[in-house]
Image (cartoon, rainbow, N blue to C red; front, side, top):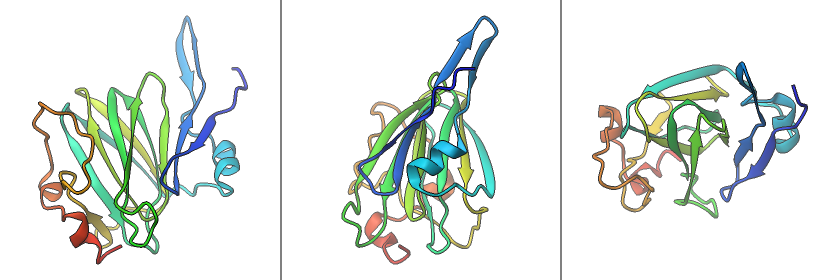
Length: 187
């Protein structure tokens, strides 16, 4: 295996990062390490403590999120696409942040295994672009339903970049998500 390091780049929202690992293809198939602890710690100045790993499978048109957890303790996430393709969205739901209400969208695909990291207090959502899209999340804390909050992914104030012409598929919980200005009481 080549020792080419993973590339890390800060996104426009403080606490959000894009990681691009090298991919090694040969006659057997491919090898990639989507998460590399030393590269993560070097970029952010601290390691990622992983308390839970989530794996979701979605059909085309599914939107999951916008989810965030009360801070403290919050829940940081390191997300990559293991199969298919998705539009991953980081939303700044931190009241008082200079980028409050803004979002950044990144296309994640199994062909490149790029990953998005979002620190505690940031909202997360994604849109599955293909059937059988698999998203893997490394989470800093276990799921705690009492502290999880949902902002409507269809809130016009956010203007999230969902594809047009496809009716989005939302869970019952996400359909009940609050507009950002009503969710501020939790941030």
